[in-house]
Length: 480
Image (cartoon, rainbow, N blue to C red; front, side):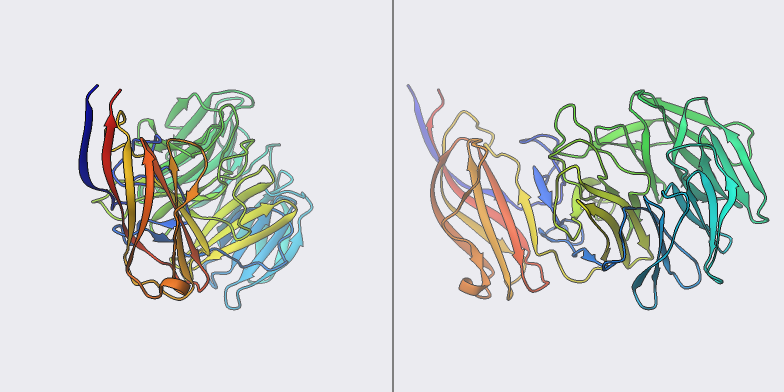
């Protein structure tokens, strides 16, 4: 038996901006197994905490908001809930109010066009006039459908109408069947593509793994192209400077439309086999140049129902999946926890609507403050030598800025896939360590494979930041 023993300087974790890894040991450079509320893009050489999501709606919201929009004069935000509640957020005061409970008692679509807020509830199109405060609940009738999504396209507002695409132009001329799709494919989501000259139409077919994505130029009597994928429905579409992302099916899959096909990019992590997780049509948007998708619903008990981003710092970095924002209630999992919609008002405000059990609300992310907690879990490390036992005798955290009042960092490990975390003997805490920039924690740890967990805690609306995690080790064992 040959015993090998040799020293290795350190295991260095110095890159954190690779997003969720595809496997527990292998991913892109800087990827991690799990993350929550992590800011990995604003300064890509640091691991820090995202800006906090704070409840903005008080006690006004009493159902799950499925769609949000704003008008073009005062930038007031309007929201439509799943029981027909129609809300307004007055931009000048930041105050939410309930304007009306619609007769249709549900929320199927919402959009702003030609100085009016259009909405669909109870298979009817209605309007609200922001200038006069007048409602008209029965402007037009729609075919029976679960969703009636809306989008401003060319010189009209288009509305999903079952297998048809309805429209209203600037002269209020109504067409219930501007475009007809294939029988049995109900329109679920709409998005304007490219520079605004094409419309993307996502459809679903009941109980069939046959989703079709249509494109239309706005003038032809028929759709221009159709792509079929083996998924149970196209759930949501978002367009960010020509990058078109689609959530399709019930397994959390994210696709990119490249002009001729749908290419699978990633899946939402932590979905159990044979269980489901998906977006609602309104739970996607762009915020500060980043594409956001939220897990809205499904049967999965382990998927995090948070707001994910698919983005990068700039062209020099790959686009990756990251969990950016947890709703203010703080609960991550469970089938009674849903995100209804996302809406970006300008460059400064992101609104997130949610349901948590029997509670409802709309959060605001405006770039101020930081989440009170955030978490990072590394991939599993074996130093490229899974056959050898390693002895770890110290871990050092090098911070990217001096620790400040109210900030602490707890560090844990899982040795050889036990499935549980053990805390290192010491943590980093301003209350005991002061304004430090690094700390070395001794340990006596034997493991073939090692995974690291870091938990940020902030009580003063600031975020600590990590530049590097270093583990001193010796490889010392026989291979077999």
